[in-house]
Structures are given as C-alpha cells and as structure tokens.
Length: 504
Image (cartoon, rainbow, N blue to C red; front, top):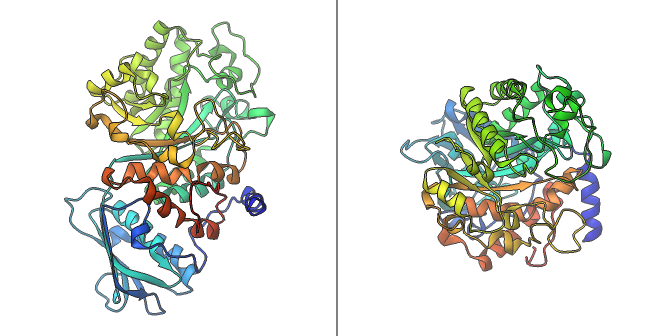
C-alpha cells in the first residue's frame, strides 16, 4: 500500500491538465453509502443502463450542467450522449429546473429503468444532484432509486494556501474538481503572506514579480496573472464554487513590505522571507500610503472577483498594537465596502468593530471564545474552521510525513466528530454560516501532497456542512467513507489510508 501511494504521488505531482472524466468502471456507491449523506435516499428494484441511444436533456438554463455531465460520462461509458432539449422522448438523463421555491442547491433525483431525472430550482441544485449521480454509477449502469436532498449550511468551504508554496492553475483546478464532488461550494484562496504574493496587481507590479519570486525553504515561487486568476474563478464557477480571495493584513505582509520600501514605517525594505515563523511583520498603520496601497489592491481584486466577499486576514498581527489593529481593520473594512464587496476575516476581526455584513472565520482551538460569541450574538456571521478539528494540514499521527501538529493531531474521527451547529459556546445557531477546511502549505509542494492531507478528512468536513445533523453517525460514516476508495483510486487521488476506515 505504501508503494502504491508513493507511485500515485509521483504521478500526481506532474498533473496540470484537469479533466472531469472518470475511468470506465469505478465501483458504484449504494444509496445507503452516498456521501455527503442526503436528507433521504431509497433504493428501488431495477437499474438504468446508458446505451447508444441515451441523451441528456436540458433546457438552456441547465446547459452548463449538462455539458459537465456529458464530459464526465462520455469517456466513462463510451457512449455519445448528445445534449438535447426536453421532450425528445427515448431514454434520457433529464436535468429539470422547476420548483423555484426550493433552495439554491436543493435537488431531487429519480432513477428508474426508463431513465434518470434530476429536478432542482436552480442550476446549482442540478449540479449537486449530478455529484450524487456520479457516485451511483457503475460502468454504464445506475441503480434505481430516489434521493431528496438539501444542504444544512449555505457555506461549505475549503481553503488552499498558495502563498507558502505556489500551485499552478492546473493544480488548483484539479483540487476544485475534487472539492466539487463533495458539494463544497466555496474556495478560499490565501493569495499573500510573508513568503509570497501570488496575484498580479497592475498598479503595484513588484508585489508579484519580486514578492512572488520565492516560497518556503527558498523553493520556486510564482504568481497568477490577472487572466490566470480569472480563469481559476471561471473554472470554479463552472463547478458552482465561489472563490474568496484573501490578502492577509496587517500582519503576514513581509512579501509586500519587501517589494516596496515605502510601505515600511522606516522606509527600509526587509529581505524576502522563506521561513515559517509568524507574527513579525506589519503594514505601517499610520502611513496614509498604506491605505492608498490597499485601496489599489482591493480595487483590482474586487474587479476580478465576481463573488460577494474579499478576505482581509487579520490573524496573528502580533507586531501591531491592539489600538492600531482596531484602527486598521475598521478602515480596511470601509475600503472593501467602498469597492462593493463584503468582508470576511479571521475571527480576530471581532476585536475591532465588524460591519453588519462582515463574516468572522473562527480558527481557535477551543469552543469557548466569549468575544466571538458576543459578536455572533450581535449579528456577526461566523464560518467555523477550528484548527484542532478542521485544519487539513495537521498531521494524522506523529509519524505523518507531511503537515504540522501545533493545533492537534487530527484523525478522520476527530475531523468528523463535532457538530458545527452546537460548537461555539454562546453563539446563536442563526449566526453560523457554515464550515471551512483550510489547508496550509508550509510542508506541501505537490498535488499528491494536497490530496494526502485532504483525503479522507475533506469529505468528513463536507458532510458536516451539507448533511442533516441527524445523519451524523461515526459508525455509519466510516463505512460510507470506505465506499469512496475505489473511485479515489480510479481518479488517482493520493489519499491517506487511515486505519480507522475499513477500506474497500
């Protein structure tokens, strides 16, 4: 098994081209094994077989989902699967938009011997239903049954740190495809930190060309042109995933400070940094140029980002005094709002005055944080990413070759064994927007590394965000997770074979 994982990792390292296609015959998932667990699912007698005459029918509003599904099924089944308008008759996989009173991602799936129908009020719901359909397919056969489903939380995210180590557009798209299979709908991209600046800003070009030139341990750097960033955003949108870009501030800013001396309080640029310590850097809070700089950066990033949120970091600002931190975060929130966006920030933002639309991302290792709970009670939304439960870069056990252990050792049972709806003491359930699984990359360099740390814990966090609380049951989840292994192997996903899971 170890040799197999190493070989898979070497293969995945060089992957840049991304495809949604699957091999012809992954093992099917039974209705009882769907992951994330749906609201309800029932197997029935019979099956539908995709043959040469099968079509995918879709109205214009569902055309994008139909093209995605065809891209998955054509190479897997060897059948042409033309996309047609509804009402053509014959065997079909029908994508139907109806019932607009349903939620954006709710769907119903029905499979019989005559065909497949996925019905949803929005295209996003159809896409969620397609992910369930993919799990139920074995070769050209799809077992008969019915699924009715809707997400528990509207926000179900994953974060990828491309600042500590840079990952190409193709590598990010590969991760997006993997996220979408488990109904993740938000990709938080950590674009700037002490070790690297990863997005081209036309008005401050040295941020990328100089600040993005290196990475942790002096590894090669890199950055996205604005066209490449737009391509990532568009690719994510085609998978119904919204990108939230993060420029961390006022700390975690050495790459910016090294790029422009005038951003430093003393006018002297520090050297580029390739270590892993935190908390030593800070923008100059009392320089007006700082806010001109941030207005330019936020303005360009807002213009590139169709989603409603920009993430402004705000964590581990140890070199910024508490009073300066409040001054800074309040002013930057206003800059974000002036560019038509809402603020997301690490939960430390509650030490300032969160705007009514600001969302705090909770990363503490204890469920008891009165300051955050008070902010939540006053209307601040909260996304939960407790570092000792949801950080995918934490080691599984002491011998895990990648990752860190400052927050905890996190096995699959730990990642799954908490309830977001009842986690943060004193926070009203209405304040909880959802969950996010961050993946920091100080020790990660390849797609194989990403996958080893994300799988199988990412599906665990995804289920906490999607599935009804009543379905959360470790003894059943570990069996459903085990059923995913054949598909992961077929896709070349380099997963950690946790001894807690009876892998198939």
